[in-house]
Every structure is written in structure tokens, then in C-alpha cells.
Image (cartoon, helix red, strand yellow):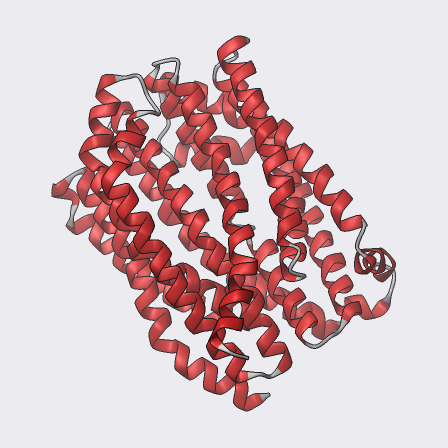
Length: 440
């Protein structure tokens, strides 16, 4: 396979995944824009805090998506159709079980989460209103993780894009209707999210039901082979490491949000706007992570080391160039773009002060995003957890050491977190590659 063939395969997955992820980011951006039209910094801060709570709660279970991508792609690389159906059955069962536990724990989880984020007074009341509504979409979000991961693992990324666009159009329309027309405020933002997440599930389920392998998954639920100890242990090992790694990453995000909240509602709202724009860049660049997961998973499943190395190189080169382009765009227009998400002069001034970090983060983070895809696709989740733990320790140390710099110190520590992850993963990559392909 030539370099142009590898690049073409990479972009055939990365481009629709990038567009899908950008559409996903519109959820948060639409929410911040709609509530920002009210000119109420505490309400905007409450949406930011509530969204961070839900992100922290649910994102730790994103392993459902990533492990499903990896195992489905590896099964595809081996040409094993039944394994793909069994992967879907196992992952969806796990998602349903986690969703049920989350609903049972809701009374305790919401109060503890808002306490952890330091929400008090009117800010806490609005954040609790938001979370009390949006929480009910949690189990649906988990199921969507599985369905999206399975479709990406089968290279059906275009269908995921179509579903995401449809769900986002509905979400934006509901934001406008419920917040600006019906004047539901924070509750309107949350209701729009629940409605669009439910629509997304219905559309994804319809797409998956058309796949022959998906029909095999329904039959596989009752087969003993689906629940074989070796396959379950592989699934749980992947999920355990991914869960712990995501838990650390989520803790970093929650610490970031809490530190912003302690600086007051203006800084919290400004950080929320800049963070949503950073998430837009992250989700864009994560298209290369998705492509690396699929191509590296398929190559490992087929035992093709040259294909694996070519996929890693292509993802790093094209991901790096795209990260540089996004950083340049944010350097030129990031402050102006951030100002469009609020009518409060103090919030606008604060976003302008900290917009430099918005320009730096895409370039600093893109290598870690791509290598995440490589490590997940290859099943090197234990090593990924180790590099995340080391980066987290450095992040915590910097938070303490850079405290005199205020909010700039917070953003600097956050930026180093991503750069340190990339360095750690790059250092262990050659050894893991030699071990995996010598074993195959």
C-alpha cells in the first residue's frame, strides 16, 4: 500500500469523523450562545457548570465508544463478521447496566457533583435545574456511544455524520425556541439537549438495524460464545484501563472548572466560552483519532506491521498540519469569535484576556489525540493509562506552582497536561509496537 493509499483511507474516515465531531460541538456552542443572549453571567456560568458536571459524569464512560471501535475494527481486520455482532451485543449490555445504575444513584450523584464543583447560591440553583433535566438523557448518551463506536469501527462514519447533523439542527432550533422565545432559560437549554439526544438514538438505531451484522448481534445475545470468559476479560480489561484513564482526564476538567468557579462568575463564564471553542477544535482534530483507531486496529488484527506504521505516520502528519491550521485561525480570530458568545462587557473582556491559550491548545494537543487513537486501536490501554497518570501528576503540581499567575496559570497547567501526554505516549510507542507484532 502506497503513502497516497494510506492518506486516502485516513481521510475517508477522518473527514466525516471531523465533521461529525464539529456537529457534536455545536451542542455546547449553541447552548452557550442562546443563554448568552440573555446577558446574564450567572445563568451562563450555571449552564457551563452544569454542562461540566454532565461531561464529568458521562465522559468517564466514553470507553464504551472507544473500546467498541477497537474491537470492531480488529474483528474487521480478521474478516470475522460474527465477532463484530458479538461486540455490539456485549457493549450495549454493559451500557444498559451502567445507565440503570446512574439513574438509581441520581439523588446522591447530583448533590455530590455540585458540591465538588463548588457551586453555591443562585449559581447552584440554576446549575441544579439544568442537571436535574439533562441527567435523564444519560442512559441514552451511553447507548449512543456504543452505536457510534460500532458504526465507526465498520467505517460507516458518513451515517454517523448524517445523524449528528440532523440531531444538531433540532437541538439548535429547540435552543432558540425554548430559551429565546419561550423564555425557559437554563431549563430550556437542558430540555433541548435531552430531546436532541433522544432523536439521535432513534436515528442511530435505525441505521444500525439495517446492517446484517447488527441482526446477528440480536441473536448473539442468547449464544454462549458471546459471553465466553476470554472475550469478556478482553472487553473488561480494555474498559477498565479506558475508564481509569478517562476518569483522570475528567478529574482534570472538573478541577479546571472548579478553579474557574472560585475566581467568580465572570471568569467562569469566560472560561466556559473558551473551553467550548477548545472543544470544537478538539472534536475536529479527534477525527484523526477515530481514523487511527480504525486503521491501526485493522492492521493489528491482520498482523500487518507495515500498514500499522504507515497509518501512524499519516495520522501524525495530517493531524499535525490540521492542528497548526486551527491554531493559526484561533490566533487570528479567536478573541473575536469568543466575544460573540456573550453580551456582558466583563465576560467579553475576560475572554479577550485569555484567548491566547485558545490559539496554543490545538497545536499542543493534537499529537496526544492522534496517539490516543493509535493506542486504543492497538489495545495498548494500560500504557495509555500510565502516560495519563504521569501527565496528571505534572498538571496537579503546576496548578499549585502557577497559582500566583491566576487564571493564566490555570490555562498554562491545562496546556502542559496535553503536551506531557503526547511526550509520554511517543516514548513508549516503539517498544509497544515491537512487542505486539512480534507476538503476532
